Amino acid sequence: MLTGRQAEDVFVTEPGPWQAHDPAVLAAEVRALVPRDVPPDTLPGTRECVLAAAEAGIPVAIVTSARPDWVALAVGEGVGVLDRIDLVITADDVVGGKPDPEGFLLACSRLGIFPPGAVAVEDSLAGIRAASAAGIGHVVGVTTSVSAAALVEAGAHTTYADLLPLANLFARR
Image (cartoon, rainbow, N blue to C red; front, side, top):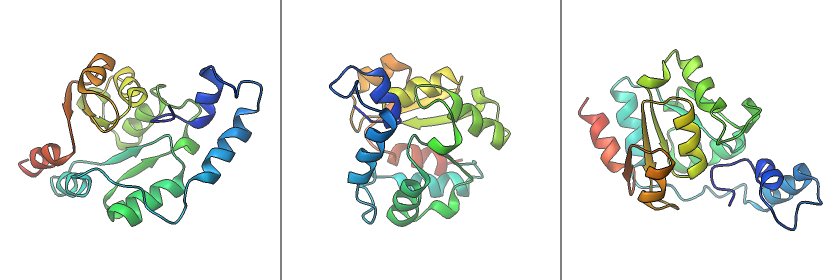
């Protein structure tokens, strides 16, 4: 339920037993349960995709509903490519979380890229919707937690099971 979205947004917009509680307090409680010293599992091809894009001169940005400490743990320690990322946009940089397009629009603006010329890779419906709403030219859905059909219905142009095919495309550039 939280996939791709800020916890605060979920607690405000989704019906549930939490509606009588402060969304910021609930979100803080959820974040406190997430281990801070163990990198999360990464999708096969993540490292290869980032390195191939960087080698091809393709700017790489992370647009996430997570906090900066998660990016440092997952991408820095977990994947080992944070130094190859040109820009990181986190929940701290935007007012509206996904599916709001603000994060993608901010990334494109800061990188000097017109959204139709960008590629977004997302594994959540909220992320696909955000990238589509931002006018991203090619939205790739990754079927880690959502079916290919659902990702396409949300706006993905292409779907993959992992990032190895995308890494191969970047490597051929």
